[in-house]
Length: 222
Image (cartoon, rainbow, N blue to C red; front, top):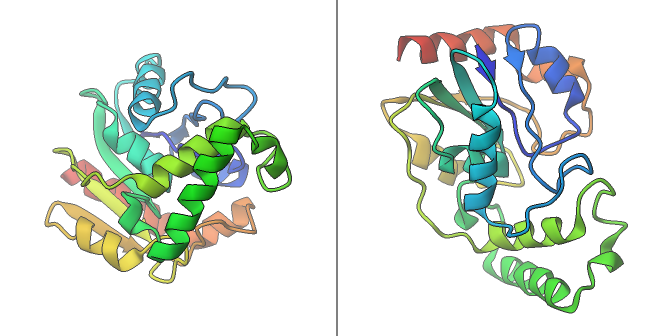
């Protein structure tokens, strides 16, 4: 089984752990690492088109697509091909309502991100934006995440939701409600949205072998 975690370039420990049980093809989003140039036109559609292109270049018989946080929405909006056997959503972002953030705070962040983009002041946030991430990409994507109100459209594929009920970044109740369908499997974890511990041992504890087997079995039988 193959999977495609997206959205992060610092999950070396997770990749090492998952590689014990499946072949992981880690696909970095454009602009989130210096190795992949940013998109000229930053949009969810173009992120998903990029993902499709990268997947098509891989000569594999089948795969499971997985996305973490915003990476899930990129995966879910990609066309994906007939080789895709299922989708795994890890602490997923699905729309602006899925953020655990009040209206006023969200509005303030939107104004800040848009203002910095308009004024070209991204350089002022060098301390807060990781050095490997393109500043325009960071701000544009942040604005996109804060504004997106498009309803989620599930594909005709088995889905596995891995969610922490106490996640302080996303609204877990809202997300669980959206995923609560007979054709979807919901698995609860204690994994943090932004883990401070990125070691292989941490992910082994948060995503034990028994949990991975449950996901795999569900997708195979669906």
